[in-house]
Image 1: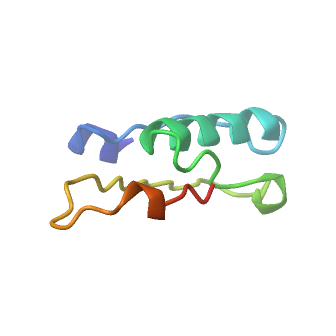
Image 2: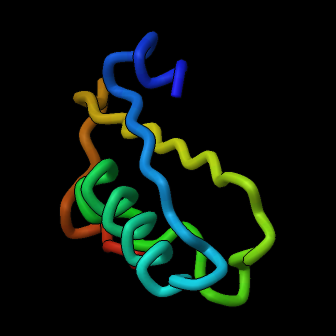
Length: 80
């Protein structure tokens, strides 16, 4: 695919949504899990998978920086 040759961090993979939907879902979820360091372990489930789809475009943006005013740890929680 042309995009992956122009954008160094872009990747492409051929997946068979019709005959191997579980393998396709596993591959997409594994990519999202790795790209977001575990914060987004799944982006699509079997009910959202269209077996007739020609392609899925999945993008993850991970924002990580120091806050100007830090949160107090005791007032935070992980929601997922």
